[in-house]
Length: 201
Image (cartoon, rainbow, N blue to C red):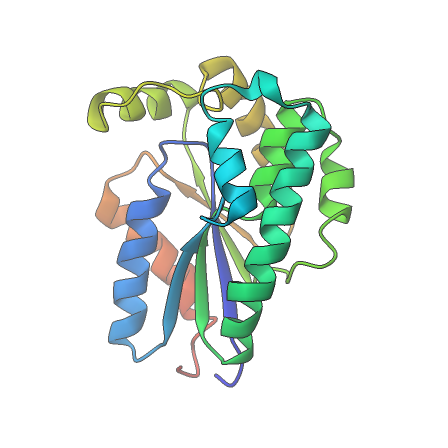
């Protein structure tokens, strides 16, 4: 493989994206691949502002919120994703612009306009979309993580988000049942990734 690969993990909160990214990164490194694990929102200035919204989204209009996500992603692409791809590395990102289209779309913005606003962002080679009923994901957040739901994780909100994720038809999307056992989910993901690294890293 003489160019980098971008694999984005998407889905509503509580679907196990972080766990599956870690497992896939370990698997790819065993194959000799150079892997970068990253996430959005980032820890940059825009990402930190987004994280402040988790407890209170009312301080921001949907338009302002969307602009924060876009600016955070521009910085992420410029400083992390773009350079890693140019060096031939595999980038695994926990959320990308599909999440913005789904979450900000659920907040009233036009998902198609959101997609078009990301012409600066490299298109993923693969989007692993972990699918799960919102009630199950909320149960995981509260019981397994022991966390209180933030403003992005309310059930009614997640139902809208899940509906938008279900409506996306991009051919780079691989839908995987996130409610299945962790090992089974990982096997499905590895199967989807194998064709991308068939010629080695």
